[in-house]
Length: 132
Ligand SMILES: [Zn+2]
Ligand SMILES: [Zn+2]
Image (cartoon, rainbow, N blue to C red; front, side, top):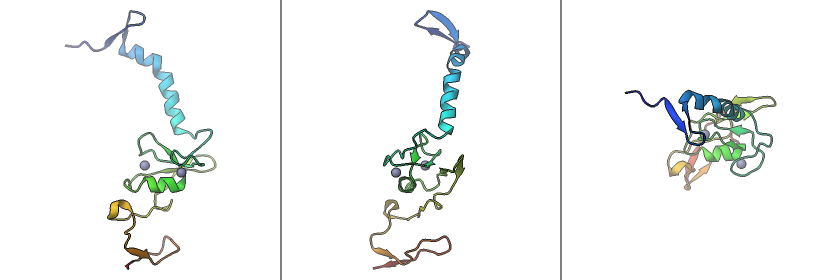
């Protein structure tokens, strides 16, 4: 039985198809989708409210972050792929590029019983941790 393609508009008592309803709202939804792809006029971090230039399309709602808040917000989502604003567009960067370090155990935080040996993080060195 096929009976779901029509809906009654209670405000005007006019029977519309679902497609008619969609066509009325189409431009509004497309505008919102395009707006989500761009950069806001005042790009502020969704957490600390400072200037933000990183957004994560893998997070629900595609929030905007500053670099530090993005790294902290992804302690439990290390596989997200953020985008960073360049002068003209967003480009994909890795969390590692933003300074993310994956800590295993301790709920994503560094082990409180260790001291980091390498004080200048770089991409070539492996961070050695020594138990106190
Ligand atoms: Zn922030
Ligand atoms: Zn994310």
